[in-house]
Length: 118
Image 1 (cartoon, rainbow, N blue to C red):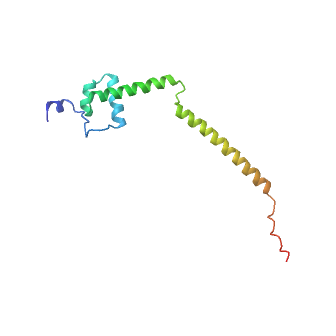
Image 2: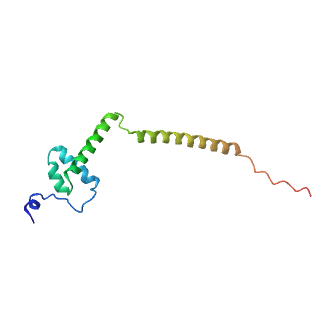
Image 3: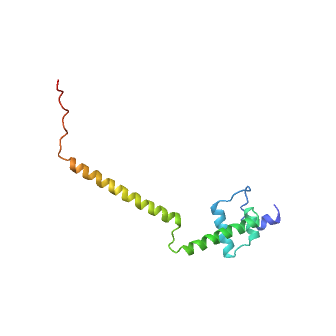
């Protein structure tokens, strides 16, 4: 084991490639809190420093967007709420029609088939 590996017990490394959301979140929080540098985190996660900087930029951009929104809801969430409202209204109208039809048919006996004229 080299001295670098002994110094950094929190090495996550693993195989190269995409890191989990949890890994990225953890790295960005550690970076923003000042507990580790970009280079330290890059070594710990086995990625390039540019990758860590990209994660930080994405996180800061998302924070900025969340603070600018004000309502706390994104465009997609607002769109889904509108669609949900439309569907609820349609279901309510259909349920009312069904209920009125059932009431109108209550007490009525089915008509018998007509007799043949032969």
